Amino acid sequence: MKLRKVSAAAATALVLTLTATACGGDGDSEGGSGSGGKKITVGIKIDQPGIGQKTADGSYEGFDVDVATYVAKELGYDADAIEWKEAKSADRETMLERGDVDFIAASYSITDERDQKVDFAGPYLLAHQDLLIRADDNITKGEDLNGKKLCSVAGSTSAQNVKAEIAPKAQLQTYGGYSECLTGLENKAVDALTTDDSILAGYASQDQFKGKFKLAGLKLSNENYGIGVKNGSDLKAKINTALEKMVEDGSWEKYVKKNFGPANYNYEPAPKIGNIVK
Ligand code: GLU
Image 1 (spheres, rainbow, N blue to C red):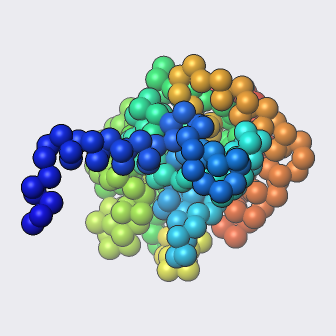
Image 2: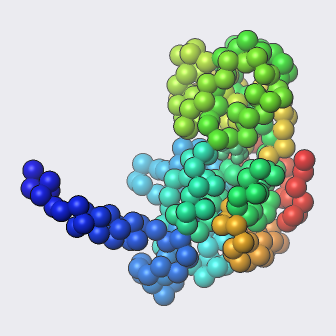
């Protein structure tokens, strides 16, 4: 292959150029048509229907996508100036610390531990940890999970809560994304999938799973969704202003109805900025 002949120095230069092009970490990198050519890079989930999902045509939809688009607009970036990046649960702090993204809206719960590494604007949604189980199964409380095979995602609060509090004797399997747990639940490799009810409701309402799965309906925790930014970033205050406006002008209500309505998700009222429910 000809490429092999490229010198190490040239290869490094190429990688650096590609990296610089791909990252919009400082929020004012050049390129794009709208917003005076400036781009903003936003981390989202891409496999969570109702929250953040990549569609067949390559675009993105969901509550977090709508919230992020509104926030970006308030920061001076049109929708076509947004560069979306998948932010897996276990990668979020690192992506912000490295400057890979300007902000993250990815079912990202505000926790004390994460708050040491990054800053959070919000909260903008209050969800609760729950279980998705097979329709013919009966799990009525967290302790019922002891001894059962439970699936969650690495780096999520849900996995941590199970180990630390809810059911320390559950056989916890952690994957990179929730969609992998769904296959396991369907073919009985696992007995339950645990994460936020906001996410589980979206899965349960998918055509391919209708009638197969149900939510256990347990409020196992409070998950205060925040928008993550780099520690010390002045974006936090600006995003908080945008989030407040989003609630006041009725956009928040519009977005929850549009995205959670199809899944019949019984969402909590809009939280007040800075009001974290423990
Ligand atoms: N909201 C929880 C968290 O931030 C679970 C959902 C997720 O993994 O994104 O860990």
